[in-house]
Image (cartoon, rainbow, N blue to C red; front, side, top):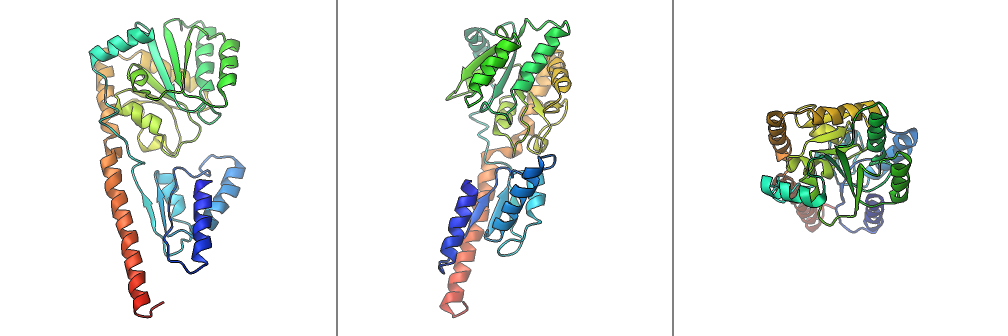
Length: 306
């Protein structure tokens, strides 16, 4: 809605002969491959219509970039793709073995296989699929007594999550941490991070996990496709297929120490190009172009060109 209102406001002032530039950064279109029909009709036409009043459109994944290039922009096809909104790799760095061991004891997960999800509690983030996977593993006779699943986040699904945990008899396995000002101490202790979102423009929670050297069990979507490499920096599953989530959990649990160490290194390497220093550099270049456009228009006005 911010993107819609911002561009409508820009259109309002442009109609009053004010020279302004509208730069729109899309953090993930609501239409995408595999989306519900309403998304791929209503939201598509809204974005297509508003593109006519947009000078520069910035996207953060390949699928959105290709779709945006089909729009008729205000002044030519000025669409950019940037590597996300900027990952702070220094802040989201791996914990030292000593720090990790100490914190795991504080959290009460020492000796357990610790899974962590970070994100708002809602339908799209899809934490329920992990609960279903754990319950199915248990019902099939698999031992889940040494698995702990920590959920960091708050949202309007909180009461539902509580109900599901009780209904599936997972009170001993699931820990609700609520809203966390800093997820790093919890995330850094994880043996694997679970990122089962149905839709992501990119997914900062996934990037931050990888940056800390924590492998992802991630759902396949246009955002995670930007950085996930199956069985190299994690395991790619389907967002609504419990069996693939189970396979991801079991894959991560069976890794030997050497393979786990290799994967942690691959996790860090896979997100290097999303570092904020690269994003900031590209954004500066884009805004310099905006400044050049304004200067060009001013010169035209001074010489009676407009």
